[in-house]
Image 1 (cartoon, rainbow, N blue to C red):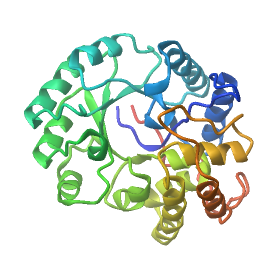
Image 2 (spheres, rainbow, N blue to C red):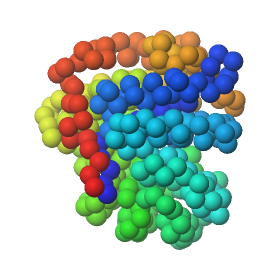
Image 3 (tube, rainbow, N blue to C red):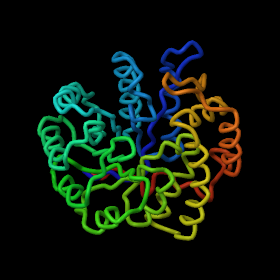
Length: 311
């Protein structure tokens, strides 16, 4: 199994009184798939899983799994923590309709790289579904070297990597040139999605894509099949939008824009996050205004061509 294309990590919409807006989540999942996403990610960082109750997390996965079954689309579910035993337990309870589990490099405790490999080896042996490793050093405090990344790629149960290191660094270059052919590297930093796709990434997990999915789907397709001039131009423009959407802690600005679009009932986030400022929301909406309204950008629209789940 090889993951490819655009996967959109969904926000968790809240009602005006702070409850889970399950209906809005379902609509949002359908909308991003309608606009060219290959699949969706539930309970990624963008979905605020740390501040959801266990019942809310289960409901989010249930809603997203239902949409993905209906649409025959892949579903990645964020599962795991810096406790190996707790991560194994969480994986055991994963919805059987999930395509893969998005499992973060252990954070805060900062194990050795040998410890990271042992952690994922234990998870891979116990997981009912394949794993996608989430490598995001600025959140975990641990940057993995090329040898460790390639060792993870050699684990049969590890099918991919969400690569979000905040740069195109030496380890990134080495990984892209030496990874196994069936190992999916997915761009996980929206700002660096275009250059990583240019290096051969098989797709992207892009939170920014929730606000204008078709343009991000077109970006992924253009770097895979051309034209390169379109890929380069669109990448420059989307970097401006992504920078505006991440000007304040994720997903505050994305939620503010989705609320302004009328796609979720409120822009609410849960403490310790704060709602997006008016200035950041205005700047993001201004950046978004440079793109055609959803459904009108026929020159960019790629449908789902070049963005498939290969089995």
